[in-house]
Length: 321
Image (cartoon, rainbow, N blue to C red):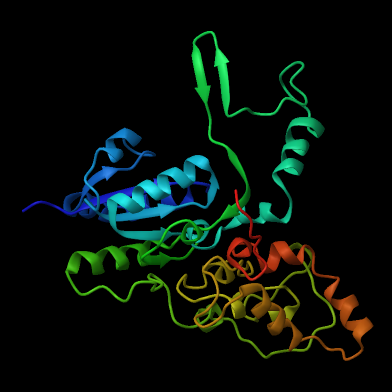
């Protein structure tokens, strides 16, 4: 009996999702035994033309990680959607744009100006020279992808069947998803978030929360925290109240506040707005000026509240490429 075909792809991301797959350890052998891996550029020598030559919908499952940052990301997203029966947005970047999505706070032009003009170069006379999509060299023509002005999530480019959150998804949750697929059981409705819980990260956290009122916020390195007490109660911004469960609250177990990588809880549209709402209930002040002073203690609120979700939030930038 022919094995189902599996594809894995890495777009605009750090590569952590690829490593998370390898973190299945011995179970990766079960994956290799159960699937015919037909495309995994980071691990095996596959070419785009090989995928183009495949019959449409011949790939049974594709785990697509990374945001859509440039023309190549878009091209391969559309190609894999055409060739795949079940396309999964795998990890925070594919799901919501992830950390690359924070680039939407500025523009492509400003990023390039900083990198190629304002930053020192190791190449003589290279300051102010921007990458070109097409260049002619003595050896022939070179073509590189066109960088986009706006970072997008996978479902803003193509239809996505399922979503697996996490930066990266935890190996235990990845295996649960794969095991379910291999079991032959009916798949959940299209659009379902897999490999995650139905509550918040706070519900998984073992720390004790007393919902203290706060007049001051701290960065984690500024105070010595109580390992048993809720970090938010100690004045450290922790995204747990605005983050879906499923990771096992690993960050708070390591005395680090939740970053929000598992995305918003069920029935929450905007993760950042949810976190602002959670903070409003714990600030010990009624005077607007005092409230503003307390909130001003939070360093980089956009990067904190929307670290992983900006590109997919209600604040997302909408424009044609």
